Image (cartoon, rainbow, N blue to C red):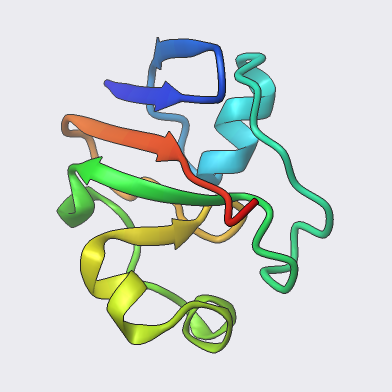
Amino acid sequence: MITLVGRKVQKQVEHDSGLTILDLAMKHEVDWSFSCTRGTCARCRCLVKEGREYLNEPNDAELDRLEPEEIDAGYRLGCQAMVKRDGPVTVVYKPYF
């Protein structure tokens, strides 16, 4: 189960293979902003509060856009982060602005 926490909407959703955190938020109508979906704008930045081990590793787009300290703290780009296997995951939308 994945808990998505947007600005005002919070939902628990099932893991859908191949979908990013942003895809899941859009599919389930969680208020999550984005502009590019390519990992360059960072409007979809989020904080993985629980379950980092169930996500894919940060990819090149995230490594280019996020500071190493952010990645170490659990920040990801919602358009790049994917749940790879079942487990409890909690992700909070945390844009820069």
